[in-house]
Length: 233
Image 1: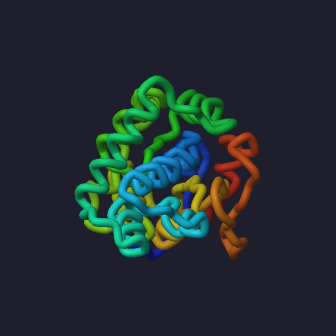
Image 2: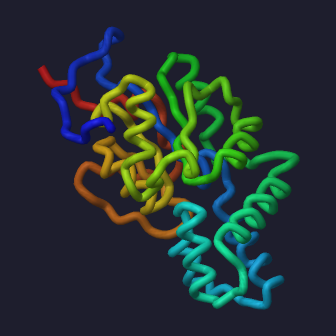
């Protein structure tokens, strides 16, 4: 796996140090974090259990297996992780069957990155079947690749998904800008050695050295992302 030890940053042929932009999906590009919670509430209600609102911050942004395990343990529901994962994914796919709502600024940013031929990857903890469904709305041609949570041995908050995406794009993690909306995703990207822009959707993301927090994607454009990667002589 790609080393997380920062290497000297040099400028690319176009004069910029930024090599790639890696983006989370739910809550970052598409307004779907609330969908997941609503579906979880509905499924557990059908199983005879009520979810506590405080649990939302625990499961948001995490891999399906972790979220499912937490909710099953917390409620004592008579369902396996595998069974629950299937239920949640099926409900989610049905929910977004017609159209996936984009986050403010997402369409413009993706178009700008594509127009300037910036290598871009979608990196999500969601399963491949869900990512492929969402990509129909986002436009698969806008991404050089996508990484799903069920395609890596360790998904977010581990660094593996972002290390895999950077390596596949031929970029060093320290020269990748990552856009994330949850603390789990931010932890994953920072552990990989990437420069992170946090756009909180659900829950609070605390300030930290090297971390940039913005109100929405409307505050993010290519010059802004390029400014985050400082070239070294």
